[in-house]
Image 1 (cartoon, protein in one colour):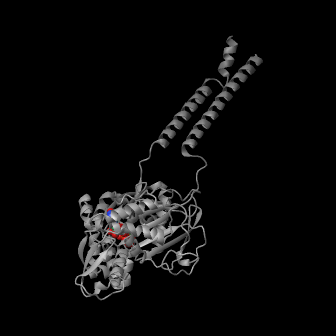
Image 2 (cartoon, rainbow, N blue to C red; image 1 turned 90 degrees about the horizontal axis):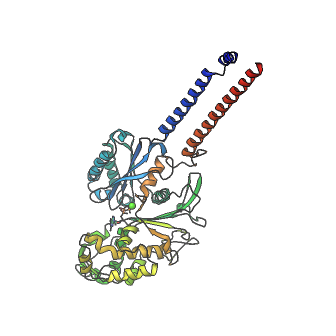
Image 3 (cartoon, rainbow, N blue to C red; image 1 turned 180 degrees about the vertical axis):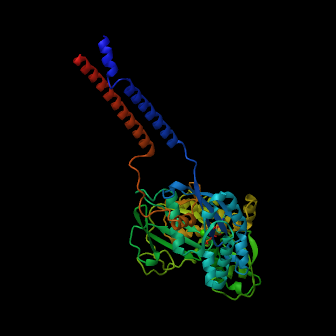
Length: 499
Ligand SMILES: Nc1nc2c(ncn2[C@@H]2O[C@H](COP(=O)(O)OP(=O)(O)OP(=O)(O)O)[C@@H](O)[C@H]2O)c(=O)[nH]1
Ligand SMILES: [Ca+2]
């Protein structure tokens, strides 16, 4: 026994090695647990920010976007953090007072400074994009439009952000970026599922953008993108002067010009089926004709007595005259000789498409029901309408019959939607808390946040990777332990054999 005891003490696999291995295993487990705890602890989110000013024809809105700094190239990560509506009218209305355009942005930009953390200010890009109002001003008075842009540029440069430019977007860009926005927010861009067409109705222009089933016959209407490894061949068209405010002016001017009485009376009487019975307001001729969308006409008076008749079918007939559908040089046209393939797939209809249809409660009816309800609404006396909506601005309120009828006629007679595919039009304001509109798509494009190729995805998700590493390491440790026990056993046997 004593001899055996002496041999045991000499065994190289004896206590120090065992203690070392046990310590090694414990240390390994402690390190693994510590690493996985630290790794899984939610990181303090580091957000980045971007600002886009939508200088529309009717007003300017400031959009602040935010996204997690580490995930800027993943789809659906950028979100709208805040919007601010600039007080007053759009920047194109400052043609006689360009300095006023820059000043008008002050309040919203100060708000942006408060909302975005100070340490991010200098790296936050600011873009201003102007749309149809400025396109029209440029047509009317190019020097004035440049002065307005210079004024907003000077104003934006006084803030601590990274100024990236103020420019007028083309109609094509406006349509295409609206399409990118709705498809980015719906997370359609990296999936094989279909995309959402985009319908935008502004005050001075309207855009239609979608992926058609047929060839695009005119180059002006075609735009190509490669996003997340997929090629997109888009049809897009922007109709300048066909936003709802300009369309109303065109429609009123046509009625005035075609009515002989209009040339003789003072004020000129405009009997309008698109306004409620009992509506009677004096307007200036200038307020209708002050746009490059209409040819100037001489009248006997500078004033119009605008009298409502509240007749929906006559209203629709008068609006149809705004669309010229008599000629088409392509296989298919929408109106005004513009090529348009048949509409296809689901559409998101936003901006004034939503404001108007939502107000009229017409966002989920069939086409036939929509027409019926609208006819009833238009024939409702003006006094009753005002009484039923005490909080609504009278200018907005008076125009809903016209605007609803215009939307219906534009979609059905203009873009050729039918009672079958009417349900494919979704009247939307926001998708996942961000407004549908061109601004987000514009920023994503200019900051290269939508890569042409899909980013490489890791072999397995992060959680799976951590679990795998822990299990695999434990497996190796168990193997080492077994090997140790085996060796110890066999060396004991060997010792015994020697004895
Ligand atoms: N009823 C209602 N109308 C609105 C509202 N906001 C804007 N509008 C009107 O809807 C129309 C379109 O508004 P926007 O989409 O902001 O148009 P915009 O961007 O100024 O014009 P574009 O430059 O042509 O795009 C204009 O006639 C606005 O006066 C709203 O909250 N309610
Ligand atoms: Ca707009």
